[in-house]
Length: 338
Image (cartoon, rainbow, N blue to C red; front, top):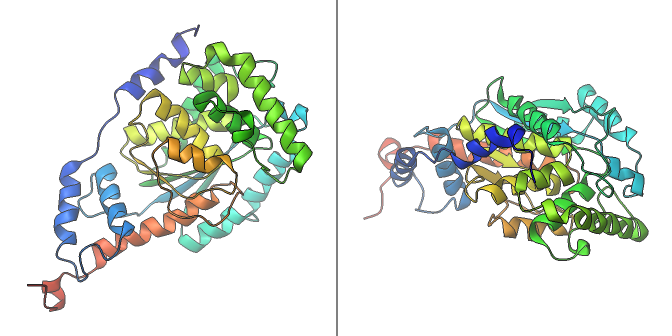
């Protein structure tokens, strides 16, 4: 049984999500038909232009204030030997982000993206999900609310990413709890686990889902029992972006777990989301297929940090500029088709 009150506001939001701006989509389609290119020649870039219009309400799509939000959390499940790195690496990497020394910093520079990093009580790991819930309901709801503040400074394209030693185990547990199968279906090397490490991850996932199995029908209850602070915050950020008409790019395996919780609560909850890439983490492809999404690329990445989402933002910016900046046949003095 859930306790009710802390999650009530989130349940109400999830049930009353705003839809796309169909007039803006129609305006994009009309202009696209007059641009100096054969119809459909830009392939998926044309779909992205429509997606931007739908979820910003701009009939001429544009990306002027893109933001990468990286959420960092620590996990009690690391006590089970699920990662080759110690938990203190999470805080060390957050410091590296702040100093500009991480991969995500370089990609943000390359594509002129804003970057915010959120430290989510790193000194206080969540509960070990193999023996207890990760969070109580009040704490999980508060963390979702904190994640909603990621857009407070203003943005028109939100890319979500994460950092957290042990969080591929947490994501695998969420997918196993949502979609069933075997624990082995969802675990992978994460930050570089060997065969024995992957076996420990699978055992932890199996034990956690078995422990909480009577409480997993409610997606928010599943989130607070099997999730982590960075995953709760990402779910909150995705939800806030929907309410504010901001399109979202979802990064890899762990970010997809946050999105999957919302999708389980409302199967339209991710309509404003674009999925960046297929992670090298083995369970990611199956997860995005469950969500009915087609990521933009597959580069064998499994770093996290929002790196895949940031690369995808460059593609999205290009799609917007191709549509808005390309001349029409009349403007360019080019003869159109008969």
